Image (cartoon, rainbow, N blue to C red; front, top):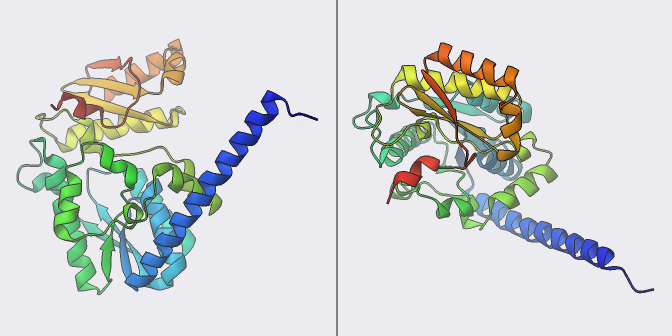
Length: 289
């Protein structure tokens, strides 16, 4: 009996899904071979989707010769540091921590267009020093193939310092990484994308501990209210909330809206606005030519 159009579409979708998973598995094999060749590796670990996947893969291949290195800085929320520690405890992975107060470094607090470069270079230099001190092997970081499509001056610092990017070398995309993370049973497989708190500031606006704390508290509030993929951008004393368009109605519910405004004003914001374009990664880069 001839199949219906619906059945044909379902079959095509199934075949497409199988093909995606097959390609991802081939890339995973390449990744593991690369990690095996390294012999010993320190993974720059932030608890995000990419670095968690890379760390787990490295630990599967190298055992205790794969370790995590996490930077403690005011540019990263406390919850991310806590999640990084929990992940390492869960999988029995040795974790090293490196304090690095980037706001005290020249030029970073002024938030120039190359802030990401200045920051990444200082953070990775600190991790490289620690890796050399403890003989941890090659330092690797978790950028993926999709990261090449956005303005990311931090990538220049990574290349200059000789830090390797095994996920990009294996041509792994974000979709591949989420698919494989799900297969591996990692809780991070559907974790919302995240960038450091400094990315919430308009270029040229001075970054301070007080403003970083305002942003962190505001985003933590939205997370507690069930908003997953979001950002709170800071423009002076104004908070510009980016959430997914499907969540617009929920934020505009009277009780939710009033709570958000009340809390954010208590954190130090004078004005609270919602961006009608919705969440998009790297929206501060839209001002760049």
